[in-house]
Amino acid sequence: MTHPFAFTGHAATIPANAKQLFGIDIMTTAELILNTASRIIHVGTAITLVGGSVFMAFALMPAAKAKLSDEEHDRLREGVLGRWKKFVGPGIGLFLISGFYNYMQAIPLHKGDGLYHALVGTKIILALAVFFLASALVGKSKALDGIRQNRARWLKVLVLLAAIIVCISGFVKVRGKYTVPMTPATAAVDTAG
Image 1 (cartoon, rainbow, N blue to C red):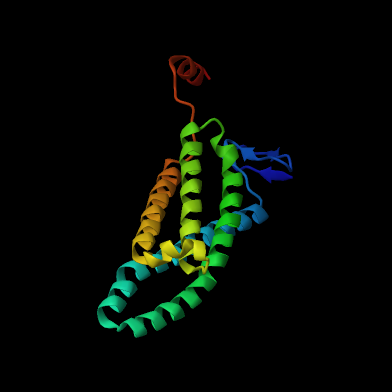
Image 2 (cartoon, helix red, strand yellow):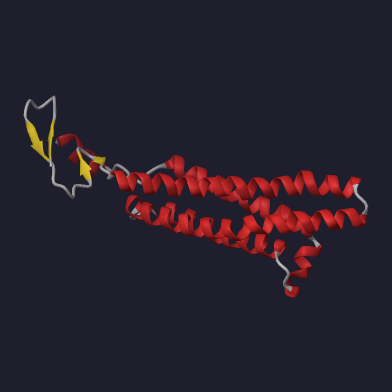
C-alpha cells in the first residue's frame, strides 16, 4: 500500500504486512475492534461481578441479617442467589475467554519482562481462586457446604482477592511496555545514531 507523507514531499511504500511504522505499532481495523471489544468485555464483566459481590457483602447481607426474620432472609437469599448464579457462570466464561485473548495479545509486548509475567501469573492464580469461591457460593455441591455456611466471610475473601487483582491489573496497565534499561553501552549506541 502507498501512503503519502506530507513531510517527505513524496510517497513512501509501506508493506501490507507491516506491524510498525516509524516505531509506532500498526493495527488493522479488525484487530482494533477485536482488541477493544475484548477489553470492554473483560472490564465490564469485572465491574458487574466484583461490584455485585461488594454490594452483597457490605450492603445486602448485613441489611437482610439486621432487618429480616430467618424465614424472610432464607427466601431472599434463595431468590438473589438464583438470579446471581446466572451472572456468575457466564461471567467466569467471559473472563476466561477475554483474559486469555488479552494475554495472548500482550505477550509480544512484554517479551523478556519477568515482572510483567510474574504479576500476570499471580493475577491468574488469584482469579482462579475467585472463580472457585464465586462458584462455590452459588453452587449446591455438598462438599462445599462449609463455604456457603460461612458465606459472609468467604464473600469478603473473594472481594479482597478481587481488589488485589484490580491493583495488579492497574499497575501492569499503567507501567506499560517493558523497555530495556539503559546501560553505558546501550546509551553510547543510542546517542551515536
